[in-house]
Image 1: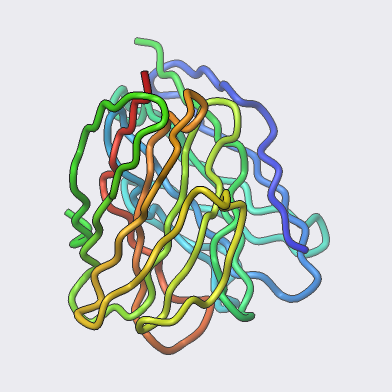
Image 2: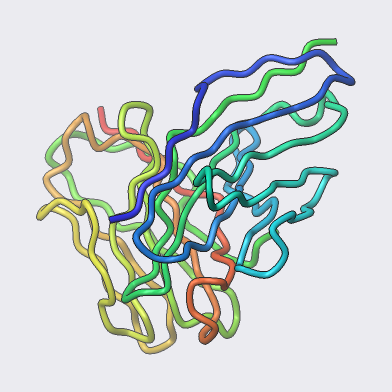
Length: 114
Length: 115
């Protein structure tokens, strides 16, 4: 069975500070990993995904994530936070098996202080 | 805009009633997924269809059912509604081929409030 743990349900940073959102996964087979963002009253938008190519993945809006197999992690980072980054972020894992649905973590709400 | 269309956007109904949520996937996508998002349960996978056939089932209650039609749109039917069914219901779709690396695209969701 696959699962995702996101450490910290709420993270607060100052504008211009580094954003680090943590994600650890559990999977019995090499995973595909995703980060989605949900702005208030909106659907889920894909930020980036890891599909076994480069371990450092760059996404939209200046975000990137690094796949570390030894640590079973896929943390999301952004060098400098903007006010517009305030949203909820979800890490998800997906296996290439029957159904291959996404299994989501509990989400991390990012707050950006001026 | 993800290209996944869900209707209605908001729905308020009474306990015991039945509602139908509708989803049109992105053009060319064969897979449709339904997810439920609530404060206490987070994002839960309900069910997946692929080209009209049920592919996988998650934490879907027996009071809930879904189907995918020949034109690939999908409906999620929720019956005997309870207060705890109040949630945001997402439909998502993904293209055929390339397995788990494909992106799954989400609609904006249908807000269901049961009173």
